[in-house]
Image 1 (cartoon, rainbow, N blue to C red):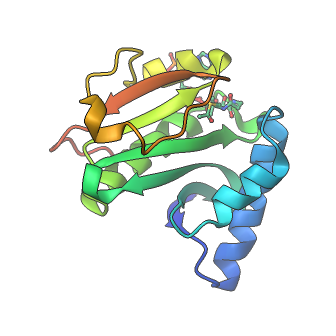
Image 2 (cartoon, protein in one colour; image 1 turned 30 degrees about the vertical axis):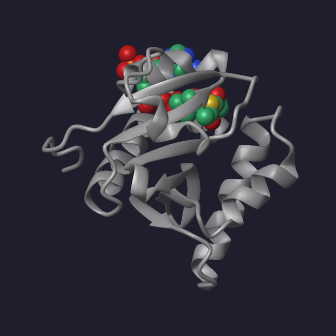
Amino acid sequence: LKFVCVSNDGIDEHMVWLIGLKNIFARQLPNMPREYIVRLIMDRNHKSVMVIRRNLVVGGITYRPYISQKFGEIAFCAIMADEQVKGYGTRLMNHLKQHARDVDGLSHFLTYADNNAVGYFVKQGFTKEIFLDKERWHGYIKDYDGGILMECKIDPKLPYTD
Ligand code: ACO
């Protein structure tokens, strides 16, 4: 089992993983248009943290780091159906936080959570209350009325992964 963070860099293996992740998102997020999923996954401003087992993608999170604003927006998050509620979603989020803090220099995440995923995000430390100054994120993330805006502060020191 491994956790990787890749973007559309043209490396064959990365492209195969990104397509695998796209297929999981398309199935698990049926309200998201497939073209929109493909566009963001392949957009060079976005990165995807993925769980890989026996070289197959089990799930992942696609996000956009806004380096100057020190926050990241999570666009999509999903684990394949028969692997849900086994802890992969939590481990994935911990790898994302570690990478975002140590590589991108981010202090917060924002996401529009689907109603049925609010419980998962709460368990990952997200709140419905937004503490970040609005000027730090307003105009950067696009309004989306299919979900509820949630925030997570990344601990500056905590080791999130072992
Ligand atoms: N609602 C409430 N609690 C949940 C949910 C949920 N939908 N999913 C998981 N949990 C809980 C688990 O019970 C567990 O609680 P525990 O720690 O007390 O045991 C905890 O959250 C973590 O569970 P994991 O096993 O780590 O989560 P999992 O691997 O299933 O990943 C995920 C969670 C990503 C939500 C997965 O279930 C999934 O892909 N769901 C379908 C797609 C989806 O809804 N994605 C999020 C959409 S919003 C967005 O993408 C921005």
